[in-house]
Structure formats: structure tokens, C-alpha cells
View 1 (cartoon, rainbow, N blue to C red):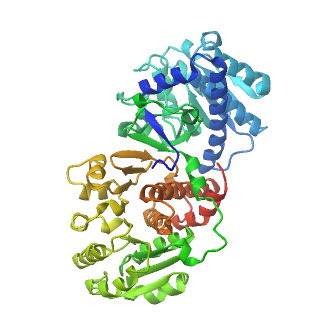
View 2 (view 1 turned 120 degrees about the horizontal axis):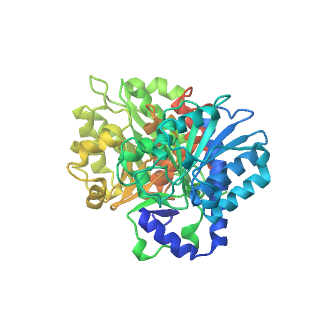
View 3 (view 1 turned 30 degrees about the vertical axis):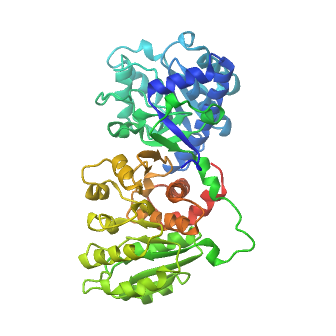
Length: 526
């Protein structure tokens, strides 16, 4: 875990204490960080907007500005947006008069007007719109001619007090229910989100950009409908000033820069065996596609050799589809699953491979589960288990669980965890668990590491099979331990999905199209 760049996730109080210590009253240091955050946010928003549609020729953005530093971040993001797209325009909707804002927010506003002021319109101050219909009338006037390609919520930061006071509840209701905003972004934390629950009182975001520090309210289940897709803008706080023992956390965020560890030239003196040999046991007569997807992903992720054990009825067609793999025809049950009789043939290969992946598309037949138990009894090296290999009938019989990567979604984890949390399970078993979801978690020895890479494009059957193949390939190569193989696989898989979504959107794609973008995700910084 220490080999990959990870940053801690803090509560609001911990984050405030860290920032107070970090900046120590140095306004110029804060201004530098604000510019870094705002410019990064503007760049990320321009990329993420493409998941909805191609950015229009003359985009118009709505910038909601509070009194504090979140407002300053939003203004600098807007400046970056307008400088990048010379035809873009912005509407600034301030919460209060500029004289009531903090000095750095005022400075950000002044810079925006000086540089791109001709393309900036300012809406009436929100604090003056206290009547029930005032906010609605003001917003209707703003969208009378056209809507907004995007909005940026910079109203309240981590020091915002809840519940919201007028006119903010009226604004939240108006903006949450309008169809006139394309993509909704929030700076650091959406207005109204906290560890407490105030029903229907938060401003909904499609993307929330955690600036420098990720705060725990963003990760609470009850807040997911408000925060949307999370992105971490690493401002280098923890590289310049490591956090103290008092700030130790059990939750971490995987930095996007971790992917660079995969970007390296292969040694000149190497061959296929130098890059790992993965044995994949997968598929059934009815679910053969899962085996094919996992195999394709392992090959695309660079494994040197791939041997795939599949039911014999699939063999002829699979060999012709992906000849790079060595397909092994195994005996099958009358229902098309892998038969226990296959054990002898599988054992011939286990002495030659460097890692094993088991599960995609195998089905839930008892005889197949018996085969998996026996295989894992003979194989004592690293293994990744997915899908129907994640059953208590299998996991409870495995010796040396500290050599396993398990990749369940929430439902699969419920199936085998008994009464334990994921922290308790990994502390007891010492396995690495990849808990798949909107923001997947890699959990080891009771510590969670979140990956914010990805897109809702991944909410398709087969995306987990691809992840199994990618992680399996990294594990087989032997360059990374279990945690690093799992974490890098999740990050790489998610980044490729982001690129695909920005090129083609979230809808009209195949999940296997992700494989075509693994190369771009690895070769480019973003």
C-alpha cells in the first residue's frame, strides 16, 4: 500500500485543522492553492462535460458564488473555462455583495472581470431574494433565452452551517428541479451536504471535485444522490507537509498519479514468460461471454501468457475469436458447467503459471464449486476470485486467504461476509477485497482506499469481468503485490472508461469498448 500514492480522507474538523496548520495565515500561499484548485477544476469540468454531449460552440455556464474560498475556487474555474473556450460565457450569481466576501474571493472576482469581463453577466445578489417566488423569477429571467451547459456550485464550503437559511432552500429547490442545466459541478462539497441528513436540502451535483482534501461527508451513503461522481484534485498538500499521527485515517484516496507506475518500457532482454502467465478458469455453456471478456482484458493488459480453462463446448469458437490465448477444453456437467473431472487436466498447468483468476461466468453448480475448492487447494500462489467463485462454500475452505484478491459488488459481499463489515473481514482474513461500486474501494487489513476514477458508463454487465482480467494480468506479472495489483487495476479500468465516455458518451457503447482505451489512459496524463 505504501508504494502507491494515497492521501488521507478527513472529517470536516480534521480538514480544517490541517489547512489551518498548513497555511498558517499565509494569504499568498492560500491564493496559490486557490488558483491551482480553480484551474484544475475548470480543466476537469471541460473533460467531464463531454460525458453528456459535445461541448457546444458557445457554452454558457452558471457560477454560484458564496462568500468564502469555495466561491473563489468557482470564480477561478470559470476564468479557466472562459480562457480555454473563447466563445464561452458565464453568469455569476453571488450569494452576497462582493464587499461582504472574503478577500481572496474578491480578488478572484476582480481577476475574472479584468481578464474576461466582457463575457461575464452578473445576476441579482441572492441574499436580496427572500420572497417565495423571487429566486424562481430571477432564474427564469436568466434562462429566458437559453439554458446553461454547466453550473458550478461554490456557495458553501466545509465551514458552511446547516440547515440552509433563506434564500438557499429556494435556490436548491429551483435548481434541482430545472432541466435547463446540462452538467452540474460542485466545488469541494455540494451546498447543503454534511454528515447530518437534511432531506431534499442539498444542491445536486453530477460531479463533485474534492480540492486538495477529500472530506468524509462525500462518502456517506445518504449523500451519494447529491455528490454524484467524485473527482479528487490533488494539490500536493500531503507531499509538502505530511500529516501528523493525530491525523491518521483508516480511509484513503488513491491518487491518479499512481497510474504512472504502469507506464514503463519493457526490458529489451525479455520474453513472454517475463510478463507473467495467468491461468483463467471461467465460463459455462450459458455464460461463455464472461470468460471471453475476462480473457480479452487480461491480454490487453499485457500478460505474457494466458491459459484459459473453459467448458469443452465453447472451445472451438473461442479459439477462433481470440487465438492469442491458449484455450483448454475441460469436461463439463450435463448443464454446461465445469465438471470436477477437469481437475486432473487443470493441475497440469498450475506448475507453470504465476497467478490464477477464477469466477467469471462459471455459474453456481455445486460440482463446479467443488472443482474451484480443489483447484485452490492445489494452488498456493496469488489468485483473484470473482462472481460465482465468491461463495461461502468456496471461501470458507481456502487455506492461506492472505494470497487472495476478492472482487465482489455489494450483493456478492453480503453473500459471504456473515455479520462482518468489510474492515472486519479483511482484518480477519488478510485478503484484499475490491468492493465494486460507483466509487470502488480497495480494502486491506481494515483500511479502505477509494478510487474516484470511472464513469457511470461502467454500469453494464461485463464490466466486472473486464476488471478481473486486468487485475489478473497485473498480478501474474509479479511486479506488484496484491494491494497494488488490485488498486492499479481498478484505477486503470476506471480511467479507460472515462476516456471512452468523453469520446462517445455513456449510452451508445459496448462495455468491451473500454479495452480500446486502456492504451490512451496509460499513455496520457489527465
